[in-house]
Image 1 (cartoon, rainbow, N blue to C red):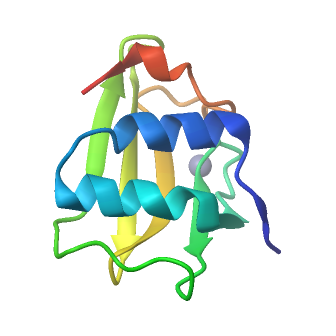
Image 2: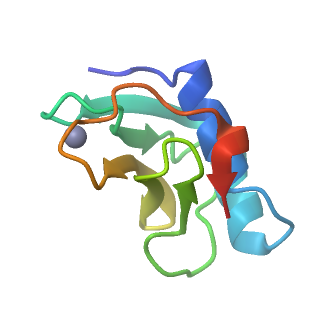
Length: 112
Ligand SMILES: [Zn+2]
């Protein structure tokens, strides 16, 4: 399975990786080469991502998650970007409530 990133997921990644630092810049450059290669079993919007490593270089060394934020709306949700070997590998949304969040909230509600 490999499908393009949805518009909403792309916007979320771009917002989370905004910034002039080398890690954010390198990870942002990978977004066009990322494909969805897996989904979370609970039904939430979380996606496993695989980047075409021949197309773009890895990001310089950084911690994991590479980026994370809470949402103002819904106010019990957060999102994290994880990497593997310097490449985006997971965009995970999580919620403090028991209901999975099935669609990406608007990036303007991100609190970074
Ligand atoms: Zn899930």
